[in-house]
Image 1 (cartoon, one colour):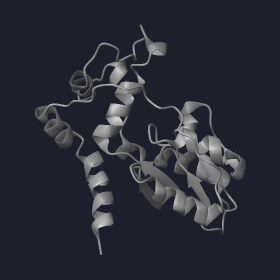
Image 2 (tube, helix red, strand yellow):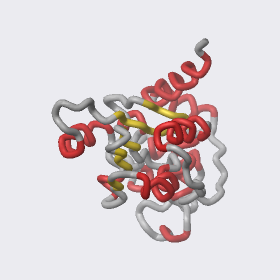
Image 3 (spheres, one colour):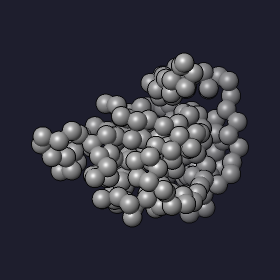
Length: 198
């Protein structure tokens, strides 16, 4: 999470949306960078407003705007699935090695979820709303916003990239995922609809 106090906005770090690369490149331009512990780095909207906003915002001044990135929900889960298949996690409870993507999504939809499928929800992370929400598949929109606010940006390298993997998902599971994670899909669909508006 990056706090741009002078520029009056916060860049939230939604997991698996490329924010690590943004943090690495833009931290020198920020007024505060929270990169650890993970629970604060990946602080959702509600937690930010409850725990951090009182620290960073001053009475009498307009609140800091919240900026975030969202990824298409199936693609987001695919990134988690591939990320947790990396060799560094072999033998650990959160490893997805040896699983198919169907098995991972099936586990994600269980209650309770096994450790390897506990990845949260973008809709829950963003619950309470942000001022500016950008699509992960349109990075130019976010960089245009950031350069408008901050001026010329440094190069933003790709980081924390998940290893390759087969992300074939059965039609049955895709339909079930859309139904049971309706909030995530509705939020993503609203971003697509906003792009289509005249």
